Amino acid sequence: MGAPRKGSEDADHLTEHLDELARLTDTAGAVVVGRLSQQVASPNPATLIGEGKVEELRALMSETRATLVIFDEELTPNQGANLEKELKSRVMDRAELILDIFSTRARTHEAKLQVELAQLAYLLPRLARMWTHLSRIRGGIGLRGPGETQLETDRRMIRRKIQLLRDKLQEWEKHREVLRANRTPLLSVALVGYTNAGKSSVLRMLSGEHDIFVEDRLFATLDTLTREVDLGEGCRARVSDTVGFIRKLPHHLVASFRATLEEVRGADLLLHVVDASHPGWEEQMRVVDEVLAELGVGELPLVPVFNKMDQVADPSAFAARARALYPDALLATTQRLDGLESVKAELRQRERELRPPVVVLVPLADGARLASLYRLGEVVDQSVTGEFHRVRVRLAPWQAEQLRRDGVEVVDERRVERRAAG
Ligand SMILES: Nc1nc2c(ncn2[C@@H]2O[C@H](COP(=O)(O)OP(=O)(O)OP(=O)(O)O)[C@@H](O)[C@H]2O)c(=O)[nH]1
Ligand SMILES: [Mg+2]
Image 1 (cartoon, protein in one colour):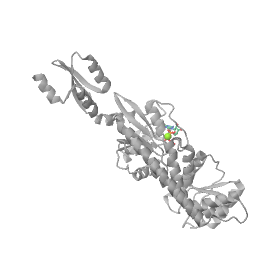
Image 2 (image 1 turned 180 degrees about the horizontal axis):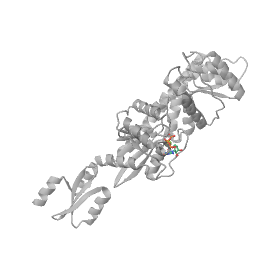
Image 3 (image 1 turned 30 degrees about the vertical axis):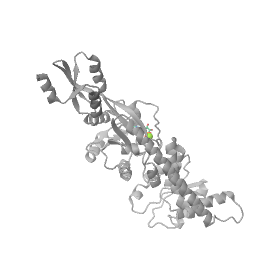
Image 4 (image 1 turned 180 degrees about the vertical axis):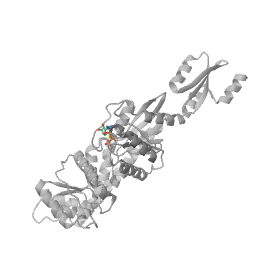
């Protein structure tokens, strides 16, 4: 059921949005048997849609034998309760559907905690209605809803549970901070984007790991996955795949996924993966920008990557349009072996900026050290100066420091010239 405000932008994209809702429903494991929509001039506080439409919905449900109604719009706890009463059937809104998908797809302990937290936060204001469900299941003549005292007790319990989950998640966050602090510094890149844009496919191709999960469904990925990637030409980066975003992502969910998205906050660069073949790519980009802002990472350096270019009807016209909007946009496809060359080149350049060239002096006899420099960094040139190999090599500052600690001479170029002269 779609019920956008009359004249709103949502109303212009009604079909597209209901298509997306149908895909979400499919992901959740239900079968869509009918669709209905109404452009709402002023939302009915009791049922969101008008009385006549509720009637129509009831008729469609009995005709198609539907057992569940899903609204694309957010329903207030009251509207949900009223609609369920009138339709005598379960009613969900988009947020609840997304929460349901997340709860069945969460795999890691942390993701499960995050989803549970989001579900409880969603449940809290709707508790009275959920109770009615339970009493209906139990049946019994004259059974009334729970008394206010019972409801209050339950609310207290849920609040306590929410606090408990928050504490646990915070512990995880600390634990992960320690892990992050201990790993070798490398260019760190996070793949972000709308769900199904191809983020996991990009990581799969960059890392060459074919068991990274890719699926033509929404929310295939819920957990952040990080891989060290060889970019060629001696460059490496740490690349993270993250949960996809979607329009009207429930706020509870964004808030509780903060821990998983830590990797995004710590990134040097965000690659915003866009499905260029999707008719709604511009709206999808806007949604992603909004969620990033909500997560407090709107200011991080970001490069748009227009993926699925193999599916775009007129690639050169598309490229011109994308570049007019985003001058630094990259074009990509994971369906061709060389489809990510532009992405790799961009990452190599960013990575080199983190490793300025330094000059290392290696005694002529020390072949092992010379060889290790070639493994460690990217050698720009090499010559002989007096009794030394004079090697210009790109190294991360921490690597140069390590060499110095090992007693190797790492100097800037002017000092080298002086040494050779003296
Ligand atoms: N034609 C085409 N399909 C692609 C391309 N990249 C990915 N796909 C397909 O798009 C679908 C989604 O890919 P994923 O990599 O799972 O997308 P994702 O962004 O990780 O999605 P979520 O984890 O659900 O947010 C899969 O069916 C992929 O095979 C591409 O360049 N071209
Ligand atoms: Mg994915």
